[in-house]
Length: 250
Ligand SMILES: [Mg+2]
Image (tube, rainbow, N blue to C red; front, side, top):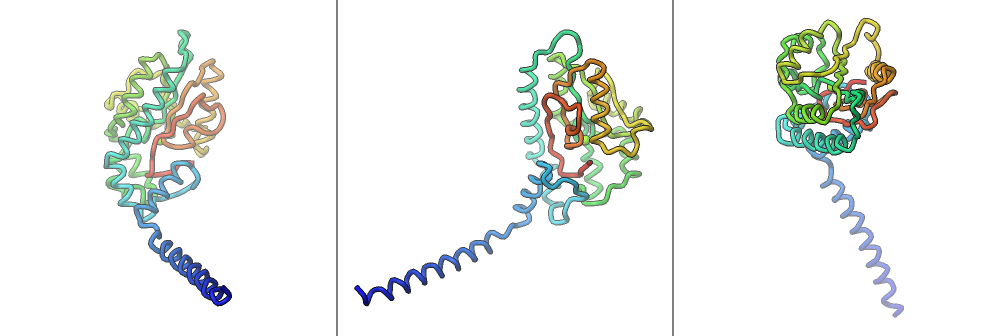
């Protein structure tokens, strides 16, 4: 028995050494590939864990390109629209015309993907002049899932308000683009006026929602691709975040 004791001790030592070695190599094998890293990065930005970020990391440009152009973006958007409608159908829409839904515009109703295809999929610093020229062209297509949602919410009896970070001088081209994409019969389009310039989107959008509430509207739901579309005060009863790995607006 005594003679076996050193052998057992040695075996335990050897096994613990082997486990440590295996664990280290396992960690080496599990070093994140670009795809794995970018999936995790996307989770963190969508959940707002990353908070403010400026450009898509270089190693994730291909990932974002494939996401935005592939089935996944479309599927994510469709699933968000499904959950949104599931909730909307539970709202008791009264006949007084005061039950409203607030939509953001860019990357919520309209897709600026044709612009970002030519601007590095969010990996370049925002070029205001170039983006304004794109907005002025009024050629942004509708996001299919949001078009379905928009149409069905109207059929359910919600009044639609549009609340965008675009500026007042872009009203005509924005309205033209909305009509071109099929977003018609909305109640009102809010754009940034002179007194809103320089405000963070969260504050500007909260103030506009407050105006609606002060006018007696009940904001039953809100849809946006940025947390700044949804956070702040005077928030909707339910808020729905659409995917957007291209840019972040505080
Ligand atoms: Mg947006």
